[in-house]
Amino acid sequence: MTTDIPKESLQLRSLIKSSGELELSLVSIAVPEPAPHEVLVRLLAAPINPSDIGLLFGAADMSTATSSGSAARPVVSAKVPDKAMKSMAARLDISMPVGNEGAGVVIAAGSSAPAQALLGKTVAVLGGAMYSQHRCVAAEQCMALPAGTTPAQGASAFVNPLTALGMVETMRREGHSALVHTAAASNLGQMLNRVCIEDEIKLVNIVRKEEQAALLRGIGAKYVCNASAPEFVAQLTDALAETGATIAFDAIGGGTLVGQILNCMEQAINRSAKEYSRYGSNTHKQVYIYGGLDLAPTTLTRSFGMAWGIGGWLVFPFTQKIGPAATQALKERIAAGLTTTFASHYAQEISLSQALQLDALAAYGKRATGEKALINPNKGL
Ligand SMILES: NC(=O)c1ccc[n+]([C@@H]2O[C@H](COP(=O)([O-])OP(=O)(O)OC[C@H]3O[C@@H](n4cnc5c(N)ncnc54)[C@H](OP(=O)(O)O)[C@@H]3O)[C@@H](O)[C@H]2O)c1
View 1: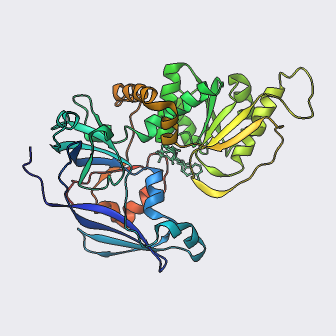
View 2: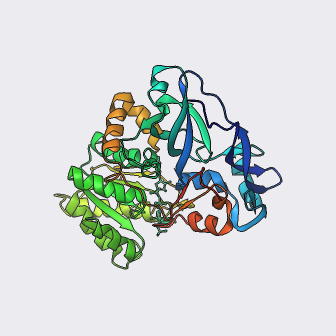
């Protein structure tokens, strides 16, 4: 099956120049021929996740973004503030492809049996550079989608689903029995709610707007606390006392929320304490910061004793830690629930060139609830 394969195809690139300017553009690249263990995928859907936005925009100030080029080949430029250039040192003047994951159809395959088995199949792919019309990847980076699943339904099959399941798995492995989650109305947060309902795990959701609280209650969430409400601390402490949650996953990072969660956990635990200890409770309280939605410093006001930990958490080091067999079991659960438990929602499906229009950039760049965009790299203008 080597017909209809173009010699060249488009790929979205993000470049930060040492002159202090971000440039987003579409470049033409040669379509490679798959090696024996590889397949060539014609990509039809790829989400713009918050982590992709991090790579796409870098430290640029997107309020300075301007557009040039043509409708088919737009070029977006934006200034990177001088003080942020140091953090960009490792990527200066390197034109970087973007897009962690996506889905499409295998249009050519190498000679190996695993590659040949995928020929003609609709697959989800993990492997970077997914904002490309074609990608050559190892067959093992693909997940064949169940019959009838569209590329849009399979586009977010890895990052968020594995993270939601990874949180639950981490909770169990570290000896906790209930969870706290922040920015909880995100696509990932909604997935986590469905997983916890299925697995009968108590989940305390923290959001920052009343409409997000209503959204989560609408899908069956029992514990939802609004961090902007005056009664937040009391509400959260009650929910923690009722659920016994002693582990939290925080997508925000900056500000005072991490410390507030630990303080509320300590208060909730102390409600049933038999005696006073000057060192605080001896129940270990853990927060994992797994996102950077707010890059401000993380500020702790410590009234939570000495039995606590804060760490970073990333999904792929986690899957490496649990090993291939346990990871495969998670992937099988995801494949079976792709259009239900692990479904994602997108505000719009856009082409590669539309992804570089300033109004589209402003919309998905907000990373707001319900605003995620899906790129279809093979969609016309
Ligand atoms: N560590 C890992 O391995 C890993 C893996 C997957 C995902 N993640 C992280 O998981 C998070 C959710 O991803 P997603 O794809 O589900 O996102 P999404 O659907 O785009 O939702 C983003 C959510 O973040 C909220 N938000 C944005 N900025 C915020 C801020 N400054 N403070 C509080 N809330 C804010 C939004 O709420 P509003 O409507 O209030 O703005 C929205 O509900 C992201 O941070 C992502 O980077 C991490």
